[in-house]
Length: 397
Ligand code: CTP
Image 1 (cartoon, rainbow, N blue to C red):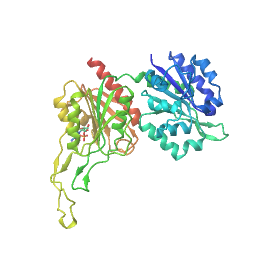
Image 2: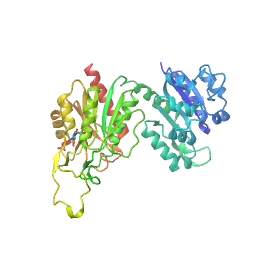
Image 3: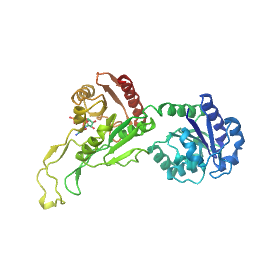
Image 4: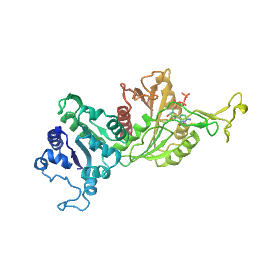
């Protein structure tokens, strides 16, 4: 069974890490504690080694490590890295890739899911730099056990209080449970809009932010899949470990998807492919005097339909953006494009779908089974979708 690496840094809530350690042990996991030097000044590593039954690692270079390149050796055996409590400093180091002690070096070496439970003064947590670091790590696939509100060690009241130990343990165990469920599978995800050029400076595009597709890719990685992410131009950090293929036009996306398709087990077409492109794009910038009265467009290839026609065992997932008759229209697309699942969004609502952080969808499978979801973040929705997809994979095997 994989080990849990528990990173402990120097917040006053450090004593609660003992409870988290206990929780993981009760679930049957062996826990290796990694402390920063400052954490080891706040609380003796002896306490953690007594509880864990293993020598705590503090130093990157120590004579008594029983292995030669300890951070790499341990990384291979680790199924989860949980950092409890996490200071602003360790979060900043993780975000920037600074590796100047054992824990920060280990973060770069480990390939397992990472869970961070921040605990600090409210002003430090809400500082734009800390928030930017959290956002970036989150985009790269790190999970956060959000700190709660309450009385803080500094005497202030506000956000920054370590999440409850039971919640941290539950989140960690959930990550471990999901972490291998797609191992050995190759997932092809498309995301974002496409751009259809009119001339070297102008293009036709749409409002897709790419968030839903990036979340689908991130969750597939968290479940152990190999992920190829074919992405249109978006302003997002790709999840770590995704094989990223950047494209611009529908034609480029088509070429990239068809190239990767034979090796894929599951294809998630979350991209908002432009439905039409200019019939006669110009190689030079169109000047005002030469402006045509109208611009002719031609349909782009329907990539998903093409995949539906040539699929050989792949599970095919489409997205439908509808403003009316959500269920009927989506069901018609499942049939027309030979899909295994469609995620249907009502884009007439401003609070969900395009550009929003939240989404609500109907998941409709090939047999017409409809699973409505609650309104939730795109990250949570990606989990629901993968749960349904895993059921489809199980039914197939
Ligand atoms: N899609 C595609 N290639 C296109 C257009 C769409 O692969 N040229 C895929 C999208 O990635 C999405 C699904 O088809 O998964 C549904 O796209 P949507 O625009 O909702 O539906 P359309 O089939 O284009 O139909 P309509 O615009 O008439 O609703």
